[in-house]
Length: 348
Ligand code: ADP
Ligand code: MG
Image (tube, rainbow, N blue to C red; front, side):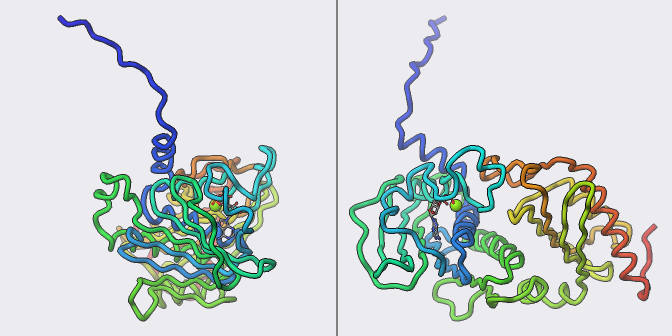
């Protein structure tokens, strides 16, 4: 038998390391869109417009009217771990912004062609800059433009051919982009959102500025859902949480389950909460049919760990079982209360 030789251990090239890390954070256009929407919201925008070509694989462009980025920051904005939002670890316990780790733009610049056009209120003109592998290419060029930022991402995964090939369907990617944008639009009704396929006259989604959550649900998800919506909120003194909910009554049901969950304004998923709420409905809805649920939970910041990997949307929080139980009780009571004047049959 031949001697088995161990492989020589070498340090990976930095560009390779960064690209691998970036590929974990940005797995498809919808991940990039979520990061960009959060950046625009962090920048206090009131209007956010998204344009896409080929499901965001060819182009994903987001324009906002927020604070803009200072010219002096354009040099490092796409480097890893550069952020305007966090300076020491302790800040994490009361972080109010979405971003905090300065990884999104850096990651995107490692897997796509990225350019930023931006103008702040103070600067006399705007600047346009392009980036590759975290680094500014050349100098920012002065340009005209309104206050705010336009981020353009072209040819996503151009340097990761296998990933690019795995994402074969622009239609599927567009669907995922729509879902992300729709959810942020419902949760942030004061901000006007537009999602447009380049070249199409009508936007796929458009919500007005200063709208309401129920109005945005009607615009995006349709009247069948919005006319059956039950709105309620609940504040719990024991476990110190607040919930704002818009859920369909038991007269509505659909094949597809929809759960829009925000915890402390972050779009997240919670399998246990979803299962608990659905179990309340399962008593009333025909088998295989589901509700539409929008829920926004506010918990004390120190009870939710935000320092998880950006792609891990599943959250865990302190007193989870108790909170889920309370929410389930609330939902049950509200659904029953709201339907006292209607007839429906409890499925046995
Ligand atoms: P993070 O959001 O975690 O700070 P990002 O990589 O997403 O990291 O963004 C880096 C920095 O770029 C942000 O901290 C912010 O200062 C700036 N930035 C990004 N997008 C925008 C935007 N749309 N408007 C204003 N500033 C932005
Ligand atoms: Mg960010």
